[in-house]
Image (tube, rainbow, N blue to C red; front, side, top):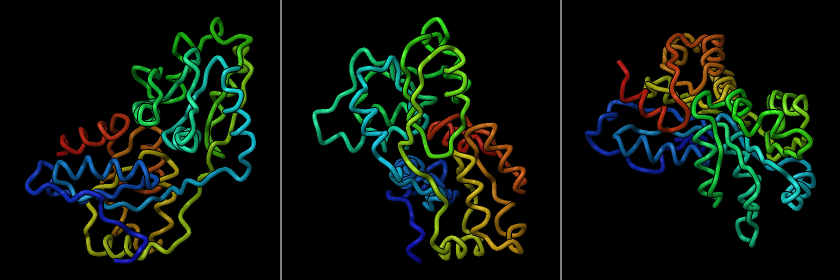
Length: 270
């Protein structure tokens, strides 16, 4: 098998409830490895091929400045697990700790889990609608709470502007900091194509629109209808569902957020 493709980090449990599934995991490497462990524990064979590559920002100075002045902020919003990892993981070898008074926000359980792994104890997140809209509905994000206060958003290089624009409208002073750069993979997808052509993939996990969008060009256009689009896609948000269907996937299942949502949907598959 070529170097671009990896079997899951944990061997699948024989005879588990997901033993018939070979699940293609498209997340970036670090979160993909955690997803792989969890689906393998239930018998699935995880197949890791990150279709979204996470790299440090081209200019790290704004990130370092924001972290050095973190005590000046009312709130810090981490828009994804990668935002948390790339902003805070480099600080883990130092005595750095987020101030106790800082409100820390995550849009969903995956980001909250990553923040917890990095030592952040109190994280606020929506009870449902795990996205920017859900964050903006929280009481501590309303104009009465944020007006005149400094808020920092840690995000990727080309994310949605809704959070920044709406918080500005509510009177907050907002710094949007690029914590990471994301791009499509640049290596040939030789191993992935071998498995697709052999019918060895029967489920695809997509936890971002970019992940599913970047997957399609890796497969030759003349082969997509036969070896890619018939595969069931498990998408963790309505926007990802829309993206997958627009690209040509015929069986797209919307799941709840994160690994728990993926596993629940896989267990309940018909």
